Image (cartoon, rainbow, N blue to C red; front, side):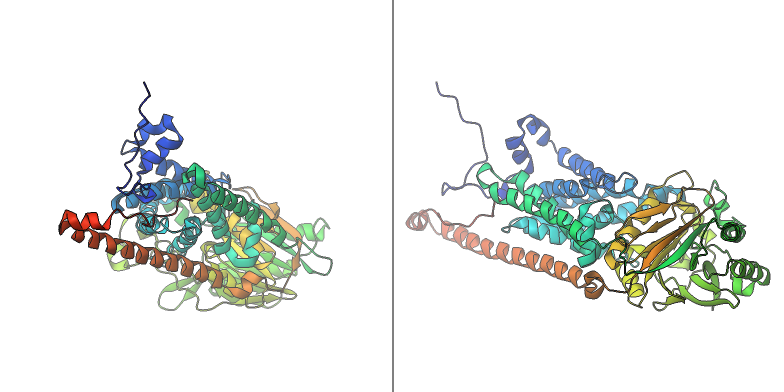
Length: 572
């Protein structure tokens, strides 16, 4: 007796294959991995896999740094979304992925409190879940992995702008500081790096979901996207050329006490004295010949807890050490502003003349440097520790000190493409990222400073600029234009870094074209989604007419015969 064939999804009356979009993801898994078939039919299984994929994406970022997972995790999400039948399934798959990604990625935020950490993670996850509703229509198009990669970049573009100025943390590009794809930043910035990584993920998903007869094209696409990513190594700027103008720079990490709570950290004193003392040690090293006199010294964000221009004692202390050193110092200062507000600024302090020009931070941290709806929310919990809002800066400012023309991106700003680009476009030949990470390192968690350093390394490559990272507590670093860290400090220690770095003024392609690559990719995503929705409506119209014809009588249906030329979605 001949064994009965395995049970499969029923084909349409015309004898053709069922459109893949109507095949449940569970069935697709069962075809390729029969041992998973029993699990894959359970409702909890796809969301559980989505959560696993989200955790894998978190592992691609520092402090773990498993950067190949930045392509694998989106591939898993694409596979899951391709099999989702209902909008609510799509939404919850994307949300499960998002929660499992953002919660571990932003673990360092728990030092501010469990509620802020989880609230931000859930908001970002819900946004991702809603944006995932665009994926099922896209996967019905030919070469769908291309449009899925563009969709991912569009999602990052949205997250980087809304709500409250956006939250760019967690973009694929920021996981690639040690990957060959980093070089693409010099051609199109972070959006192009994310696009290359997402393209690899999309091609991998297409290969996994393709039937055996249709695997050649996605296999070629996967090989091509991997090769494309590897070509990034050819685009990396050089660490230093013989013709480069050079400067000796110093980064001061003065350190602060390791406070046990946020309230204690808000009361931390002596931060300015710590950085003055560390700079005095540098003065002694220069006088003793152990260090070269720097052309510029960088202090971190919030290295003074009050306006040194309006405090005679503090002003005299800073002027003394700057004069003794004989070199300009960029002081991370809190400056007074009109209307009982303050500014987070980098203040240039010159030997012999004292404080001069300053750059005021423009991209402020909501609920950190200002409280939205303060009248309603300002009295809750730790928000009471922020008694007044910061005043944002109004424009890009370059700080000139001899041969050095410095552009600053203060802490959180380094995640924003436009802010960094605007600063470099002022004609700067050196990039600085002063930061204060003490709040996020209280329990020994180095996730935030390591993630921020990875962003700084990408910016160095993107704009072909040496980059200085100065932190109150770590991690401070000196980065060359090829993204390599030539020296860095450990956490929670007083330390001074010195190095000679190239000063460059040429603009990379990424600096020149600005946000054009991102908007082009977003336009591709929007256009492909519009095309997919149009085709779905057009394909639905004949089906409605056919149903009406059937209702008019079997004779009509017989005369017409079965439809044999119906178009089905691509399977590659």
